[in-house]
Image (cartoon, rainbow, N blue to C red; front, side):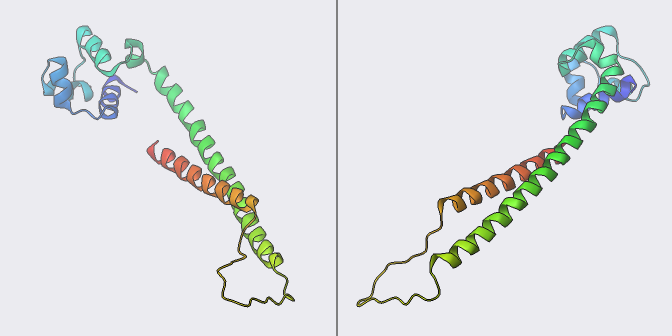
Length: 158
């Protein structure tokens, strides 16, 4: 990547306008535009001021190696994120199916079909409780859903 593209990339990453950069460096906006379009090159003093403004070293600013390394590092990170989402989705799906199956099974087994109940007065007693492990499964499914959403949002930002 040439110097002009690198300067523009750094400026846009910091969400700065050409006018803001020009003001900070005490140069004209046209000078910043010329640098970014490779019409002219900044002086050594301006290069040092640019490095201070963006918080990078001069080597990072003018070196092409950092761009190649960052591109190489970005691809595996994207793949790791997508792999994590797939794994978490599969595990979450399994937990969700397990919790549904266990809920149905426990509810069917809690009261046998051949029991006839008797009460001599109205009561407010309900026999509808779920075992503790179902609540743990529900919690795990919820955590998985939140984790997947978080990973998806992080991948979109990249």
